[in-house]
Image (cartoon, rainbow, N blue to C red):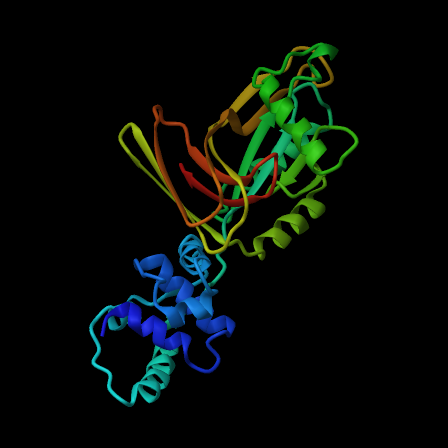
Length: 314
C-alpha cells in the first residue's frame, strides 16, 4: 500500500478533522508529493476541482514537524487487509509517540542604541551597552546619529542611514519624535538608554519571549551562508546584514562632551537589507563578505517590524 493511501485512509478515520490529524496531514503534504485525486480524499479536502488545489496549498505551509523515525515508518509499504481501520487506529497512536510538536525557539535579544558623541546624556548609555558584551543572549549594537552634529561636534561614527532607521522606528512604534540615548529592543519596544533598570527589565522580558523563526549563519572564507526556517507564518520579513566595530575611543573636542575621551563599543559600520522573505517555510541565501569585523544577521519584520531571529559571528 503506497504512502499516499495511508493518508487517504486516515482521512476516513473518526476525528480526521481534528487539528492534530490535520497537522499530521499538512506535514505529509509538505514533505511528500501526494495526489489529491482520490475521491474520498477530495471529499475531505473539498469537493470538485478545488480539492487538488487545496491540497497543493497545504503543501506550502508546514504546520508541524515529525520525528525522522516516524517519517521512516511512514515512508515504507504497508499491506492492509480487512482490519485496515483497526490497524490505522493503532498506527496513528504509535505515530503520536514519535511526533515532535512545534516548539517555539529562543533567539538572542537585539538591543539597538541610538547615540551621539555630541549628546551629554549618552556616555552612560554607551557604557551600559558595553556592559552587555559578554552576554550570549544579547546582541548589542550602537547606531550613531547625525542630528546633533550642528551643535559643534560631528560624530565620527554617525551616518544619515542610522538617523533614517531611528525615524522609521518612530513611525512604526508611533513615537512622536526621536531622541538620544534611545534603546530599541527586538524592534518592538523602546526605552531611555541610560536607565539601567528599565533596560534590564525590557531585555529580560524579551529574553523569555518565544519566536517561531530559526536562523543559522556560517562563514566560509569570503562567503556568508544564511538559512532561516519558520515554524509558522510570520509575514513579510527583511534579511539584514550588520557589521560593527567592537570598540574605539574618541577625543571629543567640541560640543556638550568637549574635552572628554570617551570609549565606544559595538559601533555599527554598515546595515543593509540583503534579501526579502515571505516568512513561510525556509529561506536560504549567501553573500560575499570581507574583513574581520563581527557579523550580525537579523530576520526582521518589514517596515521596521519586530526582530524574529538574530545570529552573530564574532
